[in-house]
Image (cartoon, rainbow, N blue to C red):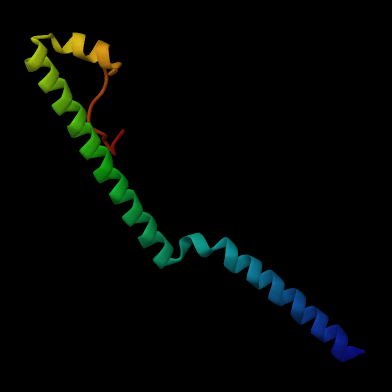
Length: 88
């Protein structure tokens, strides 16, 4: 009986440690590095698409002899459209 009780206690402790390990998995250096890499890819994509929008604005302005505010209004580009800034 004592062995069985000890086994049950050890199983409970194992489960608690397993749950704790899962809680800290987000802080695993491998996971953190992967997340940083994914964030960098997202930033690069944001910059690329922002560049594309500015190129489209400039091309439209020159091609159709329009003011940039008219181009922005036509494409639904907000007044505060700009490059992403991590500091904000």
